[in-house]
Length: 137
Image (cartoon, rainbow, N blue to C red; front, side, top):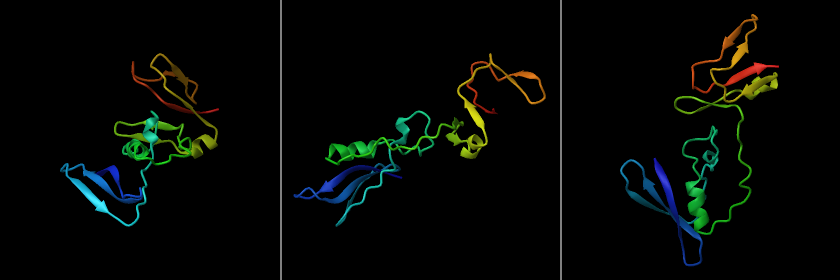
């Protein structure tokens, strides 16, 4: 409901609060504090296929960096190779599927065919639409 805009710093450069933007009514809010802990949620959406929240854009991280925050270990972002796009968000295929020998094909097209367990060869899908397959090896 709110977006972080910036830290409030005292004369010594210590964080003494934050400024928030209310995303519903567009009001600005000042929240004063003796100490500030920032949990931004990360920047997972810099990757195309991320199961992170749609709010994990990295905007807060960038704003904090511009105010002098030290940023460390940014390479440690968990990405799931089995994220499959749904109409509203990315879906995660269970890691146990791959643990049992499943493989993921991304993306496919309607010119491909797949061998089904009954021995038949069937087309993969509608023309021009991406398809994702999990097939046991």
